[in-house]
Amino acid sequence: KNEVEQSPQNLTAQEGEFITINCSYSVGISALHWLQQHPGGGIVSLFMLSSGKKKHGRLIATINIQEKHSSLHITASHPRDSAVYICAVFKRTSYDKVIFGPGTSLSVIP
Amino acid sequence: DVKVTQSSRYLVKRTGEKVFLECVQDMDHENMFWYRQDPGLGLRLIYFSYDVKMKEKGDIPEGYSVSREKKERFSLILESASTNQTSMYLCASSLWVGRAQRSSYNEQFFGPGTRLTVL
View 1 (cartoon, chains in turn purple, cyan):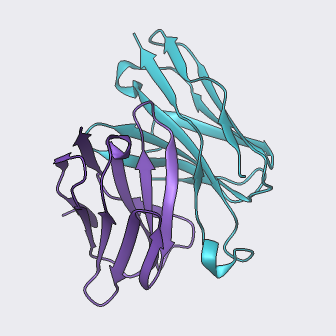
View 2 (cartoon, rainbow over the protein chains, first blue to last red):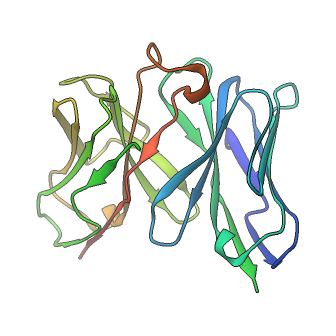
């Protein structure tokens, strides 16, 4: 069983829809990282969080440490949000190594 | 802004060739990482380095070696390229945990990636 799992694996949405991507993990963590990867490869950091909730524009990330679960929400989705979203956790016992989830591929259709 | 650059965006090599992938960061980060990314498998750590001349094996080091002679530069070497090393290679860097502010705890900054094809 993978230590970090994401759901759904693939997601297609209509422009304007509210989108949720889930991340669950099975190890103790220090922090969780949401990343975005556009076609072409470059990876951009969206959020780092270790508790509660963070918001940036139309993106909201939440984490529940007790339930070992995080969600990434996109409000009023737009075709430019089409990308792969990756959840990564910083394992508490290992300072600088990160465990990545498999990614969720999002396609937003106009 | 943190800048992580990689020497090539696309690379085509033949089986058996020695391949060098180079990564440079301009933010004085102690930690540097090499990952490969394959469909369905996500990002997997090949090697990382937490200081000049220091290296640690990641999850899939076989067939690879690394070099860190200067703090800003981390090289990945494929001694004898094979077709199963065709992949996207991503470099990343981060502050050493001892210096990181809580709000940017170990955040990794990625380069644009090198898509390597071995024929």
